[in-house]
Image: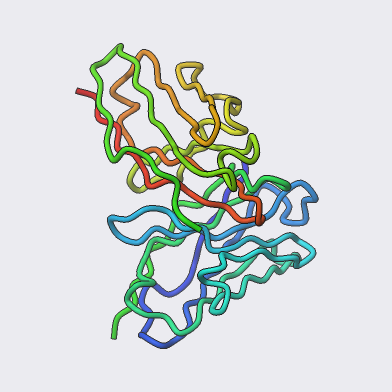
Length: 120
Length: 110
């Protein structure tokens, strides 16, 4: 059974960098059939796709966040990570990691999500 | 990219059928048959209910069905049950290789 688990600080100061890691178990991150992605949901608001990465390191980013986002992959640890720089209160959200189908980014499997609050 | 438009809420009585719409553009919903529907319960991992417009993953009840016409996709829940009360989001692949989500719909079982 595939499982994804987000981890990282729950509190980040404004202007600093948010860093999260997603650990994949029950399956290989080196799958040629899947991308791995980050999605967020601010409190009381809808979902926003942040970006996706293939095990080779190929990435796609949301144009509105591209200047601040870096997604990386560590196949040896079966993990992928998110870094979002220069955060503000608007970046406060539940952050989800997910497995996306190659070719259409269908988000088939999700982690439970982790709340990250941006506050001083 | 703009979010896909969904009704904020839809309600129905047990046993009834409800339909949730998901309106986009020629650059997302209308471009491909790559619309998915997700179910959100608080505190739980979101669950994929429909993929590629109308396909159900293994284990998903056949009470859930999807369709698309032009730039609008729809999710229908038939034989509504109390356990169907949740938030539902659509998503679509876009012509610029991004993923866009709907605004979300809260389903209430009366």
